[in-house]
Length: 68
Image (cartoon, rainbow, N blue to C red; front, top):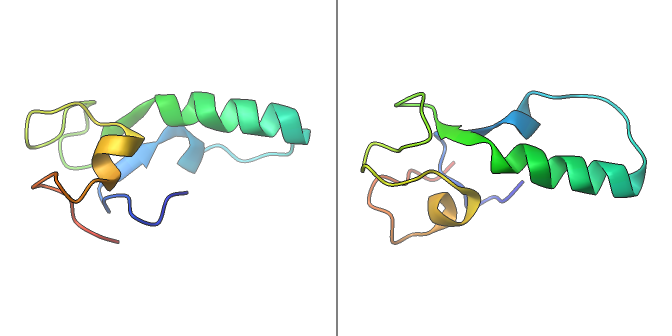
């Protein structure tokens, strides 16, 4: 997981445990990261009314971002 992500970023990958083959694990992790939300709004839209995603929520340009 990207260490620069906002502390309020959540994704399905954070809650799914299990074992998989390396290729399957990488594919599943990227798919799970595609479904993400802000823990403050509990939706896919952050408190700044912008879409939540890995790149945006790791950017220091995002005013609502809180480091871990």
